[in-house]
Structures are given as structure tokens and as C-alpha cells.
Image 1 (tube, rainbow, N blue to C red):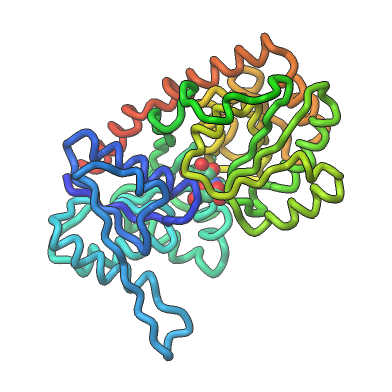
Image 2 (cartoon, rainbow, N blue to C red; image 1 turned 90 degrees about the horizontal axis):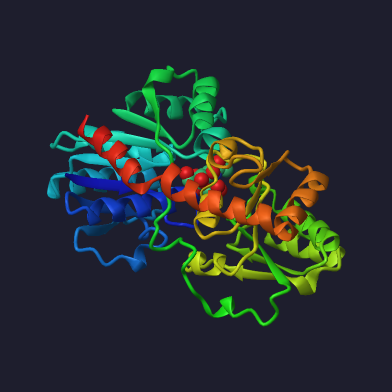
Length: 372
Ligand code: GMT
């Protein structure tokens, strides 16, 4: 099949999943994958498959426009891409505005396409349910041939906030790319000078929904509670970074916290870490948690959204209530200090990442939905 994939190229779980899915579909040799957007998706530069293409969407600036209308440019150019490349399926990741553009392009193009829309989380919980977008989000879900959600939580939430018929939405979980996330990756920092120093990590786009200040508070409290030396690595960047830095200064832990910025070698970095924190206020799936589990890093996450579908408390990781730093500190200390518990959590985390969320199963599900 010829599949067009629309996604955001900036750091974010939906773009990462869209890229990894496209790369994996192309690798099967059964499909050509055409990424369409303003820039190639995050991680695209690692791509070396001849069945993968990138089509750049050009924006038109004009004094009459307050902002260049991206959705219209995307829909118009996508229609040509569909006809010129015999596209069979347009798979939109993140409903707004990709699914809108796909539906418009499907109406404009001469070729008949199948529209598949994957809901990732904030496209429903924060954006799609907002009064300014609610009608168009519901419309795109109703008009897409297939709609998937990355967790049962997100499916239920979409039904609830948009009044959508549940039969319309299929749950297809996310997966991790085993080549990029596994416990055997090695990196310079694996040769840690001090084995008694524990590395605690967080990776996200540092938006308020990720509760980045709770990351700092948790780290400060765990650091105080444990007998180990500790360091926090913050990977990614985003609007809360300067507030996180301010809090580090206030809590006098500035020297222990490193901001590593946006990295494409996240898997290699994770293999050096001893604990991963994801205390989000909301999280429809928590791809970063699954990536950490795949690399053999125990995860302490919040009991938010779809995270309990990914992490079984006390088995494949630990869950705390959102904002409950006190309980999080006890759990984090245990994950660092109780070696037997930590080992069993690590093993179960790896098993979950590669068996519970098997890439081959996810590919099969999407391929079946593409065929109809
Ligand atoms: O979490 C983000 O801020 C990024 C966002 C996105 O759409 O790029 O992530 C969402 O999609 C990911 C991939 O499916 C999920 O793992 C994240 O849980 C989800 N984020 C939220 O629900 C907050």
C-alpha cells in the first residue's frame, strides 16, 4: 500500500510514534510511506529506507493573512500528493489539524483514499474538547473512515467529552522501536566514574501537563531520602524549563540537575539511568515511560490517564497519585535501594515493552485497519 502519514515534527509522542510506525511499515517491504508536513518528523534523519519519502508543505505568507493558513496549504498540497503518488491511505496523527486536512484532501483528490485518524491525548483532552475546537474535532472523528486511540482511557474520554459513539474508536496501543530502545545499548556515560551515584531521568516537552515542577520536587525529596549520591537529567525542552531552573535554585539542588536539551539518542542516554520520573497531570499513554522500561530503567509515574494501562503498580513500575510527592519519594527510594524489587521491576518492564506492546502486533492492527 502507499501510505501518507501526517504528524507534528516537533518533539512529542505523537510525532515519534508516527515516525516509528512509518519506518516499521516501510521496513516490511509491503508499503511505501510518505511523510507529509512542514519538516521531516523528529528522528527522520536516522531513516535509511528507500520506501520512505518526505513531502514538504509550503506555507504562503500574505499581508492579508494574520497567520499563514497551514491546514488549507496542507489539504491542498496533500490532494496533489495523493494523486501523484497513488496514495491509498492517509493516516493522521493528532486530530487537529491533520485529520481535518486529510478529510478535505480526500474530497479534493481524484483518487479515493481511506482516512485513518489516531488520537494521541492532548488533541482531545486539552485541545479537541475546548469550545473553540469541539465541533471540528467531533466532525473529523465522524468523517474519518477509521479512528484509533492510544489507550482505553483516551477512547473513553473521547466518547465522554465529544459524545462520540464508542464503536467508532478502536484502541491501538503504542510500541517502541527495539533498535533504538533496549537495555544493551551502550554509551560513554555507562562508564560512570562513581557507581554509587544514581542517575534519575525525566524526558518530555516540559509543558505544564507533564508536571515538570513535580519532577524537580520529587528528585529533591528522593535525593534527600536516599543514601546514594544522585543526579537528575532532564531531557527535552519546553516552556516550563526556566521555572524548573528557578525551583532548582530555590531548593539548592542546582549543581545536581543537568538539562540535556532535545536529544535523538534518548535510548542510549536512558541505559545509563537508574530511575525514570513521569509524574504527569495527564497522560493518555506515556510513550516515554515505555521507552524507559524498554531500556531497563524502572519507572515512577503518576496514576494518570492511560499510564495504569502501561505500568502495573509494584510489578512493572510504580504509580503515585498526581502531585503526591510524599508517596512518590517512598516509592522512588525503594526503587533505588531495594535491589531485589528493582531487578524484578526492571525485568517485568522489559517484558512489558517487548511482549505486552509488541511492535509486530501493532503493525498488524494498523495494516488491518488500512485494508478495511
Ligand atoms: O505528551 C505530549 O505532550 C505530547 C503528546 C503528543 O501528541 O505529541 O503526547 C501524547 O501522545 C503520546 C503518543 O501517543 C502519548 O504517549 C502521550 O501520553 C500523549 N500525551 C498526553 O496525553 C499528555
